[in-house]
Image 1 (tube, rainbow, N blue to C red):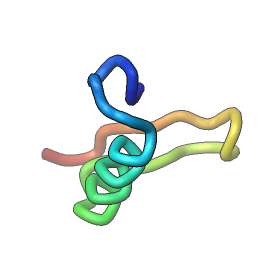
Image 2 (tube, rainbow, N blue to C red):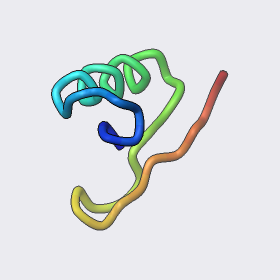
Image 3 (cartoon, rainbow, N blue to C red):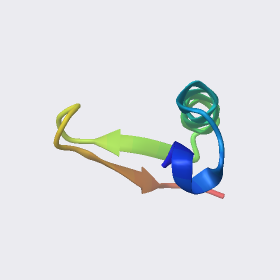
Image 4 (cartoon, helix red, strand yellow):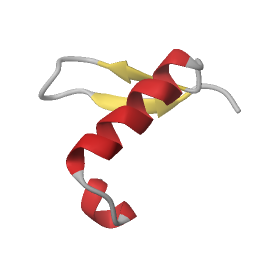
Length: 41
């Protein structure tokens, strides 16, 4: 995902954390086998 967005892995992690805290996305399932869902916006 980071590569597709043209950013490094750490910056992508920061953005994902912010989106999660804002209630816009959530992770469903196991850490390695789960997926992200868009829930707001």
